[in-house]
Image (cartoon, rainbow, N blue to C red):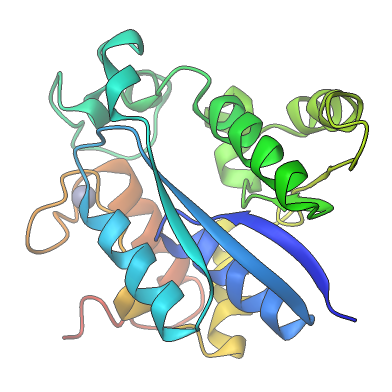
Length: 219
Ligand SMILES: [Zn+2]
C-alpha cells in the first residue's frame, strides 16, 4: 500500500521539486497551498496547475483574513520588495512572522483528520540562514510537538531538503524532469520575474550553478 502524505506546496521551485520526489518515491500526496494574501498570488495558480498536471488532490487554504495580524512584510504588499540578494535586512523585510509554523499546524490538523501519517515541507539550507522557521532546530522542536498534538493518528513532520542547498534541489529536480517553467518564485508576482528581488536572484544562481537555463526565463 502506498504511503500517504500531506505536502505544503507553494508553487515555487523547492516544494514542486519535493512533490516530484515524493511521487517518485511512491507517496500518495495531498497538496495544500496557503493564501496568506501574499503579493505574489501567481504562485497559488502555479501550485494549482502543477497539482492538476500530476492528478494530485489539492486544496487552497484561505488565510487571507489573518494577513492583517502578520505585520508589514513586503510579501504582504505593505512595503517595497527589496532589489538585492538575501541580506539580513532584505530577509527582515520579506519575513512573514512564523509563517511555516502557522501552515504546518494547519497541515498537521488536516493530516490527522484524514488519518494521513506524514506532513512534508520543503525548507532547505539556504532558507535556514535567513528564516528561523526553516532551521533544523525549528524542525527538531516542532516534530515532537506535532506528534504529541496528534495523539490518535500521530503525524510525523518531514523536511527532507533541510541539508540541501537550492542548487542541489534544482539538480535533483532537473533529474526528475520537474517542469520549472510552471513554477513561480518572484516576490513581485508580475507578468515576468523581476530578476532583482532576493528570490529571483537566488533562483537564477541555483540554475547557473547547475549550468542550466531556467525554463521560466527561456519562454
Ligand atoms: Zn523577483
